[in-house]
Length: 135
Image (tube, rainbow, N blue to C red; front, side):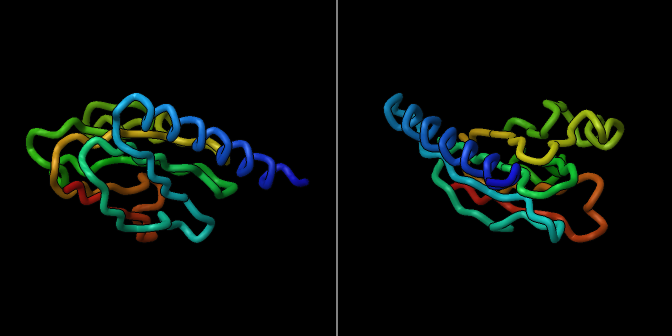
């Protein structure tokens, strides 16, 4: 088994444990988005219920970020970005601080209904953007 397959298997097992704990605790489900080797989020658009956690997993060999557009989330929502930045500007100013290496993951729980647009800082120019719609 190669390293990438092992990492995916480990991530899948962890996802099952996390999802099971979330359901048992009365919270929402966990949904997975992959960061792929063609500089994309898969799926690029996901619709979830409020209370759902989205887990972005880097299934590529290069680092990627998950960075919300500051003006692309509901006004009363919590800002989110890998690296735990509080603003889009802070995330753009410290690209390496938010990079997720191969096999790593970032999670955010969406509690406010609305549309959340996000991107990968180093690959935004290549079209690496995504959307979470919370109902």
